[in-house]
Length: 145
Image 1 (tube, rainbow, N blue to C red):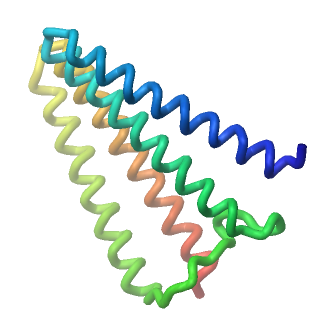
Image 2 (cartoon, rainbow, N blue to C red; image 1 turned 90 degrees about the horizontal axis):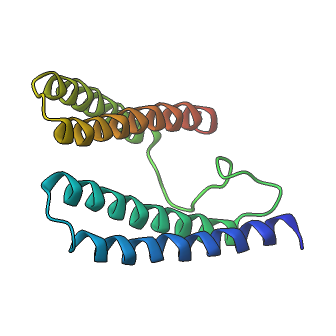
C-alpha cells in the first residue's frame, strides 16, 4: 500500500476511535457524581470530538494536495490580505498570553486539587495554543512575502 494511502487509512481508523471515545465518555459522564470527574470527562469528550474534526480536516486536505507538497505549502484558493491575517494572529497571541497569565493566577489561588487539575489542563492547552500560533505566524511569513 502506498504511504499516502496507508496514512489516509490510519487517519480514517483514528476518526472512528475518536468518535467511539466521544460516545463512551458521554455515557460515563452521566454515571459519575462528582463535579471534578464530570468536568474532566467533559474535557476529554470535547478533546476527542476536536481530534476527530481535525483528522477529518486532514483527510479533506490530503485528498487535494499533490504528493509533492507539504501541508504548509498547500494553498487554499481565496484572496487573503497577509497584513490583516498577521495582525489578527498577533492579536490572538496577545489574548493567549493574557489567558495563560490569568489561569496561572487562578491556580495560585486555590488549594482544591480537582480544580487545580482542571485549571492546569486549561493552562497546558493555552500554552499549546500559544505555541501553535507562533508556529503558524512563522510559517505564514515564509510563504507570504
